[in-house]
Image 1 (spheres, rainbow, N blue to C red):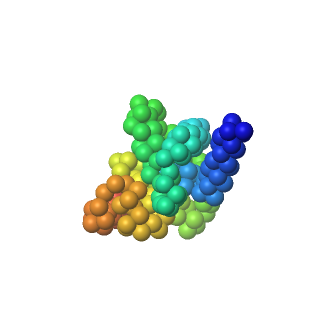
Image 2: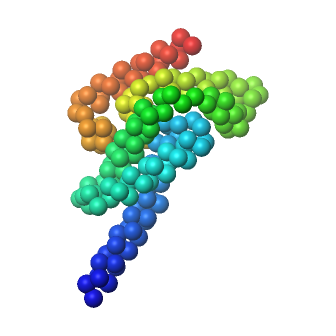
Image 3: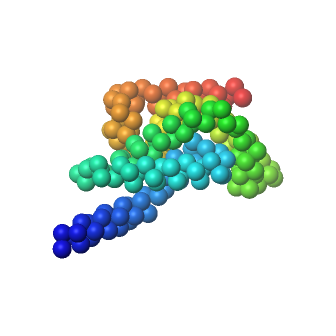
Length: 175
């Protein structure tokens, strides 16, 4: 009887994890897309994030937002991925093709296309922490939540966001 209760708890835990992962799968996709341009690497990174989330799920404190906990783990996995893949070849053609398919090439759309490419180059040049900060900022997370996810103070978040905005403005203007 006790064996059956343990199995049921494990089944319930898997179902709860699956439901939460499905509800917040956009986080995994955003992080994977931000840290990898190659479709195969993105798929590998997304799978690794899901695996690490499952491994860490027993430590999840239900009193906290799942999305905050999920971002923290996903970003840590992605940063480790970037550090481990620094010797891999960058795949700029894949990014260019994806942008070409997303934004047309006629008239003002070609100007938009070029600005998007330039923005991606600026983002790619960021260190992993600033890339995470930008992702969370663009996802409209509060400074408090960003601080919690990244493990830095709210004041530090505000300062870094201001500097990051200025850096991107400068990079875009000088390109």
